[in-house]
Length: 242
Image 1 (cartoon, helix red, strand yellow):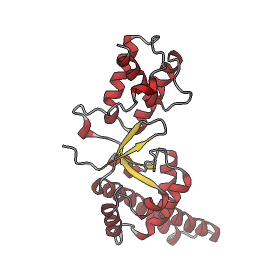
Image 2 (cartoon, helix red, strand yellow):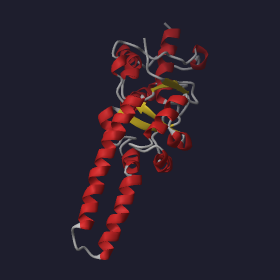
Image 3 (cartoon, rainbow, N blue to C red):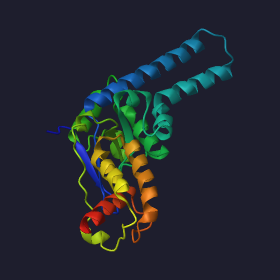
Image 4 (cartoon, one colour):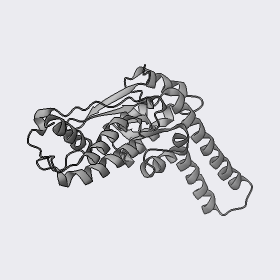
């Protein structure tokens, strides 16, 4: 039985992308670790200001840095490290956009500026209530930015759960997949069967790699199709002609 909250997102090509939402526990662990790191940096800067005779400009810069660490710590990590701060890496979670895409600068900035209303330790209970009360486990910052926090590792899926193939037969009726051999088809099957157990960036990478190799051998497939749509379509077309 699967107890994780999930959200299914339909791509324009009809492929269903299932994301496993991060729970309150893993998000708390990530936030606690990031807060400890922030606190250590802020304390070091504050002590540097208090116990040195640095020029006024240096003190001013240090105060600006304290502000940036307090409110902007998460943004560069989330934008440049595929949605993951140090704490999120440790907890196995990441921030993504509402359609599962990488989070952008503006969205990350919005969700973290609004952290002022649910920061640790005093106001975090408000964030927990918001996560529990919303269908996609979003805190106020996520609602405003249109972001989700999802799991990056899925240990509960190692038992063989596979994502369903959703491409209809009629959508691939004109595809010519005769150039693909059995080894290539077996590789595609293996990926499709295991994709739910893969971290999101790994899944996206392998889907894109496989699709780039398969696409030149598939006649009739729409140009620029989602990689998983193409791979699913190949399997459906092969089965239809078997």
